[in-house]
Length: 378
Image (cartoon, rainbow, N blue to C red; front, side, top):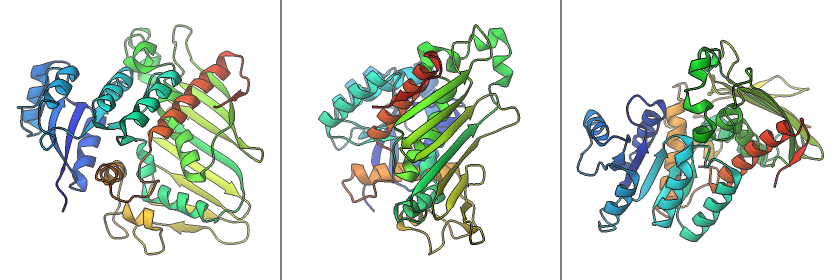
């Protein structure tokens, strides 16, 4: 087996959900070893956390700038090769850019930046660096999402007619209805989260899946947000009409105040010959529907699936795989790219997806603020 890739971690310490997801994902296929980190703004907290997860503390740094400075003193054989950025949104751009400028590969949480202008600047830095940049749109790693993509690409649905994506959660209900809480949570603070909460955090996943599975791009959109309270600056619910080309139209529905919902991401793609439907809370079932035949159900691990789907399946049929495995598939694709190995362009979201995502988020905000008008994406 090839030598393990030296991984650095930024953020993701303590009881961070996203932190454990990334660490487990990096470990699953035995491609990475964590050699350095800044888990927390406080050095002692970072050191204590490193001890808790049993990694060496000699390369736990007091801050991000020190990590860059000290790692560059090491030989190429020793130093971090790729850094995983798991910090709050406002740190994604400055960290990713400095990493690329200094010759490190990057695996970054979304949204990639705080705004579209930063995304374009980061894109230029990425092109200049020649390094790998992977964006963790986690749900593209599910085998059945990848199966849908490959079947649509092969013409299984014929001409696409309509798309429908929703991402419903209810987690922000206990916060949004309390004035003090909604004023203190970073996800509702535009200086830390960016210009959008709901659409920027989860709606962009639905947008990404529509483009990932169909191979089409959203050309224009019209958005209507709900903020619930006058003093709340960030959307917590929204509906977006999308046009992907002259004959492909649809809707993206996203909410953080959908009471009782947990992680309700689902997409449906309708074409002239049939349709696909997939739901994140039941990820091992891909439904293919037709007007003339019974509904078919595709499941992971079977020989009838595509090479891309099977490459992301680790267990025999009937053994459930979930979000850790999905994120692991993105880390696996990034590992192939870092090593210069051949890989399918659907194995991990790229800088292009990050730029598209920021274009989408800014366009939804602009559409709402201009009175719910159609906005053309770049």
